[in-house]
Length: 381
Ligand code: GDP
Ligand code: MN
Image (cartoon, rainbow, N blue to C red; front, side):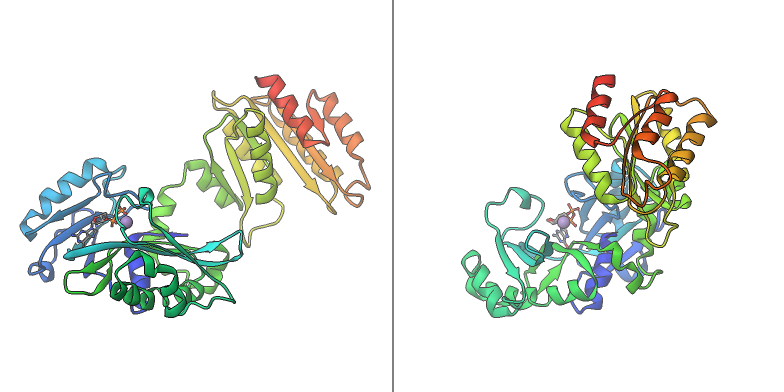
């Protein structure tokens, strides 16, 4: 789950890191009386995408009376006028730093990233220190200092090392995939203040945390779903609509990604990605096919690919359910079926027998996924 800035800062504050004073305003709310004597203001749209500064979704102003003008400048750049806005006290910036802790998936450990010039153009900044944080390199200020000392003045490097050494523990306790602070502001008074936060929590660890916290982030994520994505979630699986022309029906993230890659290797683009939901029923084939039919009715879609891999459940049952779906209503687009079945799955029906049953209905089926994708490319290209 990606946290909105407001929720991310609440998490940082809970762990004792300084963030600017701020108040979340719903659409139509004005600035509260307590903000009147702040030294300056920022108004920041709470959307889950980054790069808000460049999109005009972050506005700075000096007097509380300029609030309405700032809001008027933000509104046209928003997809949804009901987006909440964060009103913050502006911090006087001496320097913007980028600091992040993320999971290095290849090395299977955390790593710390530090760029001495943070802010909106950090992607193009040349200087970046990567400090691996594993069992061999505990995240102490000393090890971090050694990794970043060449990038910053010594006294700032030392203070930043002490600051950064706290982040890996927060990431572990909160089950974060990413904890990015950009900008981490060195204020004119010498303090370090997290002025923006991009935080992603590992969804698999959701059960360890309060289901009611971060209501804003949940609401924003929900609002970003398409109608079919929301419907799929209600039916017990996860759908992600992608920009493509082949409806892909699979079960499990690994198989889905493999098939998306195979399609792409053959010049085709998947229009859907399906995955299982935690705690959902483990058999949702009928529901997936229902959504696939709705997707396939769209004019830009050229074909439907159904790929199944089964080890112990019955191939016969699965093929009978598939045939019932095929016969229920005319298919909006040609269907291609891939099947892989282990010995236990093939007891009542062999893959060859399944392929023959589908062939009789005019549906091409394959045991080799590459042959399947080549057939789709040949028929649609
Ligand atoms: P993003 O573009 O979505 O990452 O939004 P940010 O919250 O990082 O804001 C973009 C830029 O606004 C930052 O890089 C800063 O330059 C500036 N900014 C953010 N907070 C403050 C602040 O408290 N004071 C000042 N002066 N500038 C700020
Ligand atoms: Mn930022």
